[in-house]
Amino acid sequence: MNPLSKKDLKEQYGNKVIIGGIYRIKCLGSDKLWLRATTNLQGAKNRFAFSLSINSCPEPCMRKAWNILGAAAFFFEPLEEIKKKNTQTEREFGDDVHTLLELYTENEGALNKKN
Image (tube, rainbow, N blue to C red; front, side, top):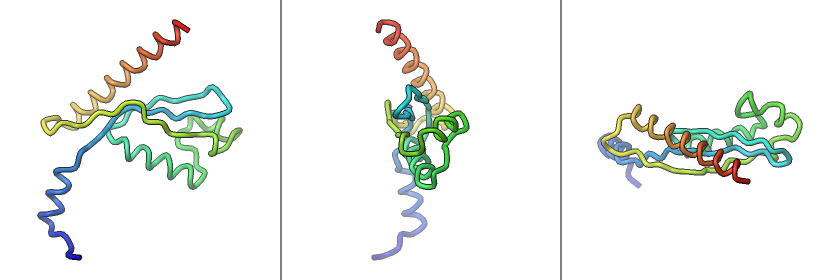
């Protein structure tokens, strides 16, 4: 197998599809859940999986539930995905992802009021 040249590597990187979105971390055994937005959904999922693998709480706000219920009670759930357009800057893409989170949060609030 031939190693890729720098030019090929740059081209692959430039053609990489960037997917952001919103996700939640849910804690089984409690009603706790945390909604988050990210410009790199796969990276967020990898960080969460790594935290689980080393039994390290991913965020301080989750620590109490983590200490009581343990790492096995937490899971990562992607909710909405959005692809970065070639014409978007990182900031524009981040703004779109955070707007998606706001819309999702508003819709969830409206659904919860009906129930």
